[in-house]
Amino acid sequence: MPLVTAEHLVKSFARGQNVFGTVSSARLLAVDDVSLTIEHGETVGLVGESGSGKSTLGRMLLRLIQPDSGSVQFGGHDLLAARSNALRRLRRGMQIIFQDPYSSLDPRMTVEQIVCEPVAIYGGELTRERKQRAAEMIRAVGLEESALRRYPHEFSGGQRQRIGIARALMLRPKFIVADEPVSALDVSVGAQIVNLLRELQKEFQLTYLFISHSLPVVRYLASRIAVMKQGKIVELGATEQIVNAPKHEYTRTLLAATPQLQVVG
Image 1 (cartoon, rainbow, N blue to C red):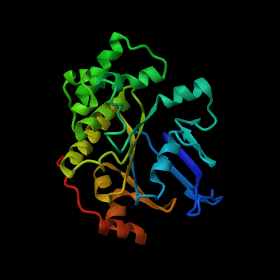
Image 2: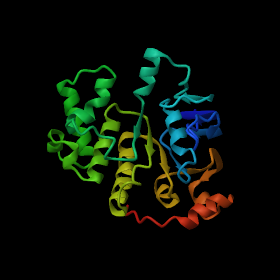
Image 3: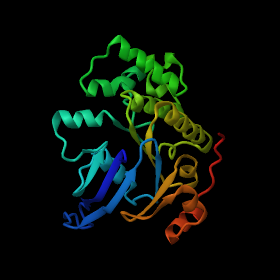
Image 4: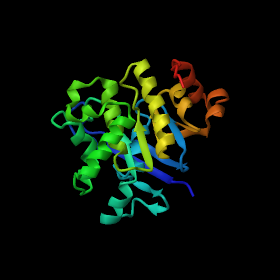
């Protein structure tokens, strides 16, 4: 049984005000009848240009956004039907790594408070054991334990993204949506983060949905790639097939337009 199964997901958003200042009744169809499965321990890459619906789909798989219709199963449980305590239990098994390492960390909180934030959200006390786990997670992402006493502004963009990854690992999730986690970083730092994610997947038996606009970046991590355009998945297949023998014209356009990322393994 796949860890994540999404079937016929649909999501639209109001377009807001038009040029005359009146509210438009028209809606933007962000995700249009998308189905997707993700196996335990797998990385599925989700690629497409900005506005294609990638982030909306990723957030629906975590139930951070409620779909208009469709279903999501997580570990055999109906995520969209879950309520209260059942939903809290399911959500402990899923986390997100955000795109922007600057806006995703609260500047008023220490790194220890940030990394321990998921524990506080789910009602746990910050015991000595949990603080020790925060130290373990900080070391796991390649930072010194002394970083826990510092604030986000004291770190570079790549270091901040490592802090965000440590936070995502704090509750020992099974499934992580990585939403363009290297797009705000320069190429060399982004390559380090991609390598880190691959190492952490092996260490913690993680399952990823890795969202990116770059096929070469996704190629390094993913066993399968889904290509998204205008709210639809237009091509889905094994990574090497998608990269070396794409069937859809849009996939070929993405490959031609994206510079290569050199990742040293």
